[in-house]
Length: 315
Image 1 (cartoon, rainbow, N blue to C red):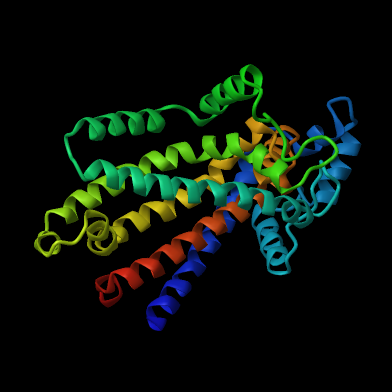
Image 2 (image 1 turned 60 degrees about the vertical axis):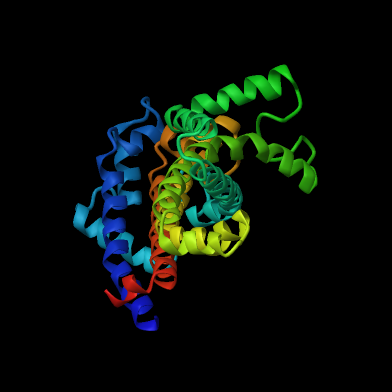
């Protein structure tokens, strides 16, 4: 297992290097002039040229990439042009908020998705199976930003039982206040992943539930709950874990829209503001952090799969 883990860790290195190339290249292909965006269209050409030289924009792209890479190894993500502070500080302040929102969303999506998928698979073709399938397809089809706006209209504007924006009330609040502000963003962010996990769980359980060892367990008089928890789910989980890991990565990137809709003070909202103001260093830093987190999650999924399914490790 240790050899497998080390091999997977080494395979991450070229992937991370590729991520840095893609992140740097993204900053180069964004249309418009960064100096003009910062100084305004009425600025003089001399001022714009001086700013380009100060930011290193007049150097060749390859030279700028190696400088960018060297700064990354030193922990320097650049300086945010809109916030006037190091990008690492801006991201570190907001990273915990994004992790809190995305982490809660993936937990909710996993627990609810596995439960719904398993419950539907226990009686395939039944009324509850068809009803749950329709509900899952609905969640899998609606855009997250539209779903979030509907929740705001219903629960915040009409019923007035949940806050619509922000992380805390004006003047601050305790854990219960933060939890109340999290309800609508978590539902919005977890809805699509819940649907995907439920569909995969249903398919995986249907493949396992017809095996001989499951029929043997039932013939021994074991209760249905024990059969599911002891014999069905452990053998269905390897394929479900893959989907859960992918959804965890997607939730980090999907948090950009959700945080913007609900004004949640995370990396996603900062990225939206950075794109609006052409804050290239912050855009690059935020995307890099999300991409590296996605790679790390995939690494953990591979290790978890090898733990639950030794055939993967031997292969």
